[in-house]
Image (cartoon, rainbow, N blue to C red; front, side):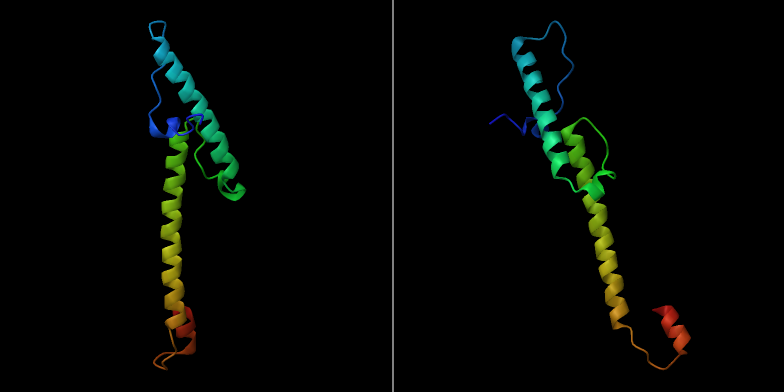
Length: 106
């Protein structure tokens, strides 16, 4: 089925030369088509608001790595925000300081 995963499962082949066999040329052609189609499908499915943050590349494997790196940062930001929101909702005024100090601490 078009070997769409070929570009994601194998590294980019070396540049073609006159001494390459027909099998190597065929593999290179298949890899290039797989890479082009994979990039096209991935770029079509990525949300518009995050497209500008993803590395611009012509390699599908590098594109996937860039998306993975962004998702790791995003999950770290979400966990930090969750922790801060949890702390904010738990803090209660205990009367040991002024209301101004309590609000500032929040």
